[in-house]
Every structure is written in C-alpha cells, then in structure tokens.
Amino acid sequence: MVGSQFDAADKKTFVESIQHTVGASYSVNINEITQDWNYILEQYSSGKLTTTEFIEKESGVINRGNSIKN
Picture 1 (cartoon, rainbow, N blue to C red):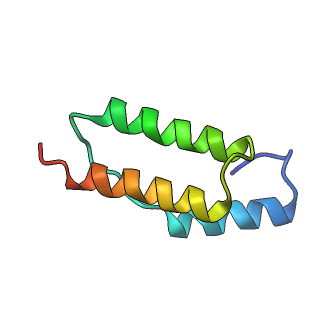
Picture 2 (cartoon, helix red, strand yellow; picture 1 turned 90 degrees about the vertical axis):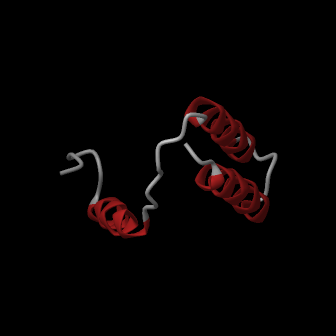
C-alpha cells in the first residue's frame, strides 16, 4: 500500500496512525486556517516549538476552524 521504500515498522506505524486521524470540516476560511496550520508546522519542524507548544497551537487552530459557522 505505501511502497517498497518503507520497512515493516514504517508501514505498521503509518497504518496505525490512520486510526488517529481527525476529520476536518469545510470552512469558508479554509485558506486562512491552512496557512496558520502550515506556519505552526514549519515552526515545529525547524525546532522553534516544543512538541507541547506545537500541540497547543495546532489544537487552537483546529478548535477555531471547528467553531466557524458556514
């Protein structure tokens, strides 16, 4: 399913992670939310945020997105 470049442990992790996905409802502000999400992800990826800070900030973006009424 995910190709031969991944070993068995990678494949197992990938498949198990699917059980933890969160649906994202459509929002008229999806571009803004996506930009915010990507900015925070970039900050985390570059080591500027701890894992705890990343989760707190991304949770805020998710909660803000889920509270928007279309």
